[in-house]
Length: 486
Ligand code: NAD
Image (tube, rainbow, N blue to C red; front, side):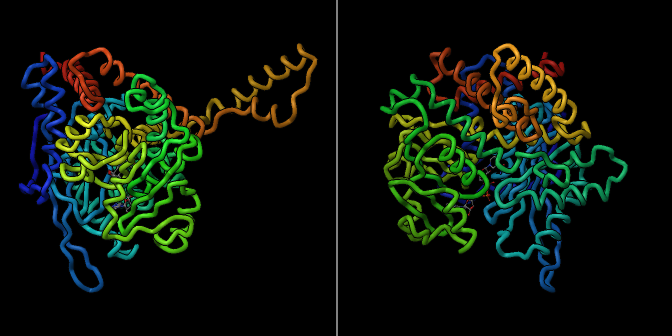
């Protein structure tokens, strides 16, 4: 439990905006000042408990390359710690500590009993072959194993920017090779392919959670009417930045389930724009075939030099789903969206948020909105430590019960259902049904916990502060339960 720094280099990212961890801590402090907890307790919640900085050699095309990596465990008030692993050239210690902190607050808000963590490797995955990435990933995992920074009851990574099920499978396999006697070894990482111990619905979980969260928030007239918007997602014009795991799935559900209109998709190499709407599935197919969203024939292509100006186009909702600090003090005054929905982690800096709030723009905060990934990761972890597929015990029982009910209704009414109606009513839930309904329920419940705080406390002016209060209250309670702070 004690704060510990294994190895750390004092790296603060060289950027013109506020350092990311400082930005997160500014939001934390804004909420903490409204709370009546002992200073020491708030300080313990805020700080990052443990950071491991590593440099390891990997042979790449005949040359030895020294690769830099990190794993930060922000809070141990609940174990294991949980948080993704990011592959990006921009990764540094400040970023990883900030992302680990966000994980702590996020888990608390959605009632996932984990502390927050994050890992990262400073590489551009596009510069490496699959085989090279596998070597880097396995070597990084060995570092984590050696320093006890991974394990089903210690610290459980997941995918993040630049990683996915493939990397998680390599991590699980490496861990199991080193710990063959750990019966729960598969639970050392989540976001694995389903065939390798993953859970159905994890891949799209963050994007689907973003959709559920936005749907719930936009259904509240008191929240959307002051923005001169009608409640609901239908017809809302949305600009999406980042068409990766989170951005693509969020856009897909917003369009297919929410009837929203995706007017622009911004990617690393440029953007596409069509004020009448872009078909998300078609755009994904175009990118699959050509390697880029650019030159999609049913939209205007915006070149790289003008890419970031697309964030400032007219729209109802701006959905940043790429990286942090995308909306900063320089472009915040020009954002025309009425709502900024933070699908990425930390896309709005603390200074930018002040500007947006002054301009009457609603910000749906990341620590609530993109928590769907960790919710379903929690389900995967539970599945792995229970050693049973979700739904295995009850599916057939529920089908039989439903069948008896349908038979009875037919008998009593004298009417027969069509075979399709019968099938739909009788069907017992499978793993995907359970995961999605658990995710939906969690996102709705979490939104209302945050909303209650926002509504009931006159001194809370924005949803991020409400979300931080929600998180701090729960973490403080956990510390009190542990008996550390009397
Ligand atoms: P990803 O790697 O799958 O996708 C990111 C996309 O953003 C890529 O397509 C990339 O090309 C694009 N991109 C990079 N720079 C850009 C730029 N300047 N402008 C526009 N697009 C750009 O990553 P992801 O998993 O979707 O993660 C995106 C964000 O969501 C990150 O902030 C991550 O921390 C956060 N997040 C991810 C998860 C998850 O489950 N994957 C969960 C919670 C939060």
